[in-house]
Image 1 (cartoon, rainbow, N blue to C red):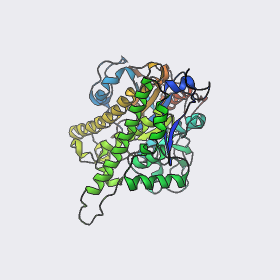
Image 2: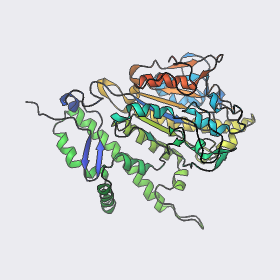
Image 3: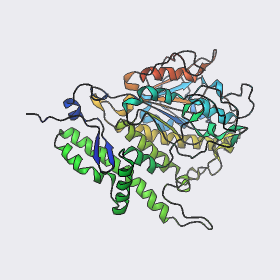
Image 4: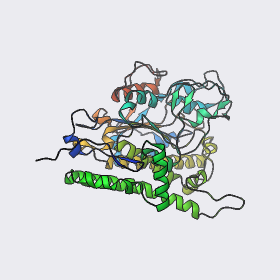
Length: 455
């Protein structure tokens, strides 16, 4: 006689809740309607942003239609090209001045997901619009523990003048909950990890964290009893999947602890306080490690259905960070004003490819996550990658560098380079309407949209 079990969503312990991936053994035994993943995986949506535009000749495929071998900036995506759509010719008109003068970087990021013109101000009266991720989160967010996650790599503020009279809020925030309310991103991986895997009682959470740090134990140590009990009800396939998942959680946790130890071990520079775990200085020196850890956290959040909507800018718009590890110590923003200088263009291409390598890492991780009916997380996700600037030197906002990766639960034909006509211009927001439909959050219009993009 089959043992009666109920669908659970998390392993629980002292101040800890480790959400579970889809397990067929539990789904088949659960009452109908107890989880959106039963009978098929949910669709997820993520927006990944890169600043300062790209070196477009190194980005754009030579031919339209079926993607063959990807070259230049897109080459890291070759192993996944059957899941990739390169979308050329889309525009973000509200990133243009439209009578407001300089400030293309602030407008590029603030209008990228809103399709709205930012009010030119560096005071408290900021105004732009609700972003695409939050439109979806208001509809599907009630199905998950977190309606959305706002991740980041480069810290930023929401006050001050950051771009020709525009508030820093515009160039530092990708997600907007309301027209005057940006969603601050979390750039500390440990803070994200604790948020994802903590219980709901703040007092109990504080006690658990203090106990873990005192005895140097893992978050998983607090839920192992529950895991062992669950294991007796699972088939061999699901037991293996659970073991692999818990190992991935442990791996992220160990990476965070490694970063903490390395921060403490790093000798301070003269007249500078030694960096502590998770400090901006520590992560600024390790951008690849930082980005990939955020990618790992995104994958785990999607895998366990903690959220279905995520935003992740790899840096703030107008960022002038250098990338010494790829032999580009100069500031990114300064280089983007290349004036067609061949050496500067080559360095911009290196930065673009570095960012693409990190994105390819995220795509690859998603392809390894198995979901119902033999699908993968990559089959069920829609990842939009791009920038609100085309060429950083021209500050143009037409023919943006846009990728759409993933099959959206079988709703997207991928593996193509699609070029959209420029007369009339096709707004980027038309793509959002198509994504909204697939996420079960349809809208008649959004921002400056003119219709649903056919993809």
